[in-house]
Image (cartoon, rainbow, N blue to C red):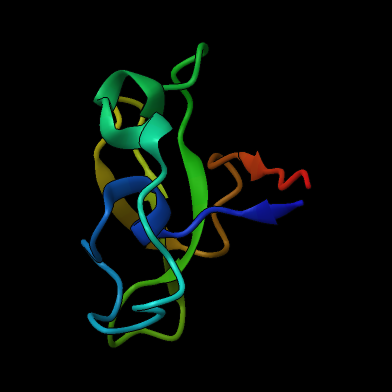
Length: 86
């Protein structure tokens, strides 16, 4: 069980530090379509990527599937875990 990164969801860093995790992460086919980034309840969900140049802001997926960032202290953003089988 793990938290998804910007690379796994968007295929590139949007708010995160460019070059971070390059070579380890790639975009999942599931998230190539924006509709799959939107949860059924349209809630915001955390990514494991940290906003570039910040020690207190982290990246998340907005209710409409776009990338954004906020303080790690906010509780209105929900987790969306990834699972690796095999």
